[in-house]
Image (cartoon, rainbow, N blue to C red; front, side, top):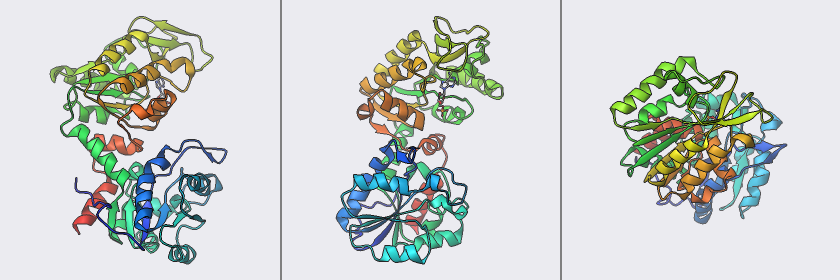
Length: 396
Ligand code: AMP
């Protein structure tokens, strides 16, 4: 994929509109996880070294096209300024003459962070006039927001038609790592797919099935697969509309010689609560009145053996309701197994990242994708509008 690079350019004295994904978790106005900010620092540091004037823009949450203090970028700015050494200022406006004047007064190597792009409904509507107003804040555009690349918004798509556009270092790394999964992955290639629903993962499963050697299923989605094989699942999470597709996926993996594994034992609970009565059952089936909340120890051991010999691993989605400590063991053990393996390991999706962090093994993972939805859509085989815009802009 020929993304226009920034390393070969010289942005000295130029105003750069840097679209980042600083859509970070907040608690009482304080950033609780800086991963997404830290991942963009190499791009920012390179631009500072070159002597660029940087205008940083991001979305934060879903403010529904209106200003809302709960979603103000000011909260992120407070954390961000602790992570960089150069002067950083904040603009409470996104577009207009005041913020334009602020960008014009930036000195080389200085940063201006602007307010939440989504305070304007025109952002998500990919409004042409709004894209133009954003482009007036800079001479060039750099997109480092892989996590927003699956959306055709003014700051990810529209703006590329207005000023010369480039891919940031994080954007390129994300695309290169995820591309390596679909083009010539080292074998054996193991995909570990968990999380709550089959509906959100079925497309990725279908797209990966002819590329992987093993598919290890866990989490709430397991139960639709088990039920499709007439195995009793009690009151576990179940998506009736996806039962047939789950059945077919098991079938087609058999035909293609893919080893698709389902949980063979479970940690079950009598209600969806951390105060629930729980037990570990040593079989695939679950009795009436009980629900599967985590994979059991036999399943963990089966999966560990496969992970140990993998050359490539992709993991998305937890193995159980890991937010509740009682049901976190399966996910934690799998995180540790992935960390221990010598495989190229790529983890995508917010919850799997949280699980990796909870198990304290983030430094043992080859690549942690910052883009949950974007990494899924990429691996589903979809073209990401934000990436397409950069490639087409480069051709122009
Ligand atoms: P996803 O966003 O699809 O990757 O799903 C993540 C969510 O799946 C997490 O919030 C988990 O609590 C939930 N989850 C995992 N296993 C189960 C399960 N057995 N039953 C219900 N929810 C689950």
